[in-house]
Length: 323
Image 1 (spheres, rainbow, N blue to C red):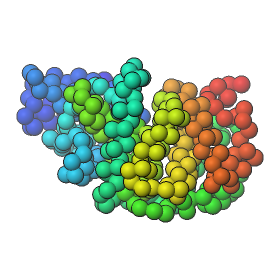
Image 2: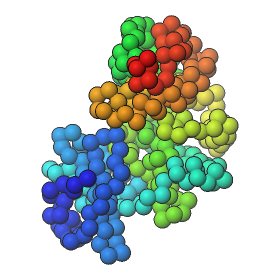
Image 3: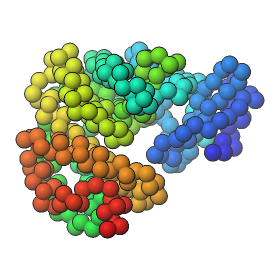
Image 4: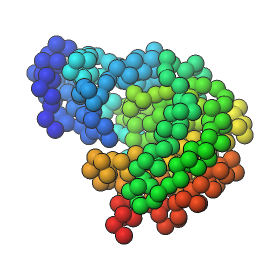
């Protein structure tokens, strides 16, 4: 990746004149990241080019989290006109690779990740838009908007909307907290090689139900999470917070909603954006979705899926499309 044209001047203005600018792996958005190195110092340069990206939500939420003691990157420089942000460098060690390569550390790191959510949920929600019924519907509709057409299914949209509407009350009841929305092992960094977890990719945060980020973590679209580990971590959260059966229902409703959304998003990344690798992640997400649909509270939504999406049409849309 070539650094943005304004990077050198921006860095010079923020005390990093002459620093080396090295590419860092990006994500599924238009944002790009570079490591800035000067002697024994390093920082991360975020390139969030307008109009495709707006770094202000990331900056605001990072400062909100940092003020409450959470390990979000400190912001060291901002140029909103050019979409440039200079922030802390948490290094390259992610929770994802750590637990994949060192299975013995998985329980401890997942406990640490759960404990961050427990602490976060003790605070009132930040100044964020609500994770309300229209948002839940709009996200769930990504499956019928992208996945169904990609595999040749003409879905009953009215029935889909009605089925979800019957179950969303569970996801709208209860406490309202800051929902980071993309809280999973690839966005949790082991700062300095320690077990202290740093937070990334929270710019889309909303104010909603506390179960959502547990779903993000324990039904991880990018890695398999053992159902036994999922159960143990849910039990830990519930034991410490006192959450009860209503939380379980909300967890599965939001799990089904999130997984339906992700199937749609991954299909869109393949079909529209040419990012082929995301299509191959869909079978895992379908497995999570089917587990959530098995909960009795999801009966109306399960009935819709059974009537509209046959079992052999649930998987990698690129493979199914090629059949």
